[in-house]
Length: 161
Image (cartoon, rainbow, N blue to C red; front, side, top):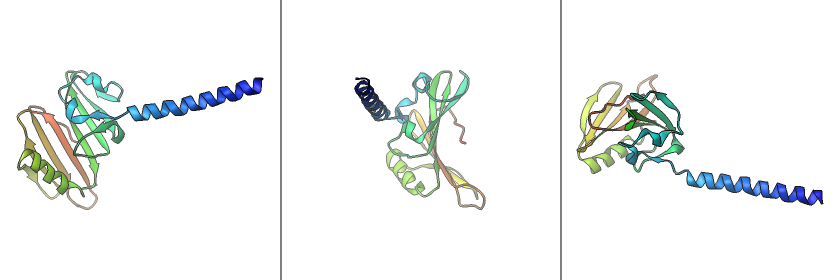
């Protein structure tokens, strides 16, 4: 009798653990970066926060966010006075820079080149309420190859790591 109860309890517990992990992983679709700008920072309460109410940033890993165009490994979401004002997506390497630049040109028109030097380039696109910036490092000895995409409400400048 005790053996049968033990086996039933073990099976139910195993099925429960497997099922709960499946439900949790299916429901975790990530935060839509395009839609979060302008919303309350309460949306990010489950992520690590650096800063205070006046200015803060949250670090999101690749599985924590979604973006229709840019795929990166880490995102920094910035807030000021409790409101999300923008984000920066960090991508390793520069192999996708042409693809991203062409897509942004298609969506928002030609870019404005902010700067170009021996170490990298920065391009900017604007809409009536947002600024989008794509910058990357050039191939240079001892400098890591990274691409950064930032989007922010107009009037806010983001820190790029």
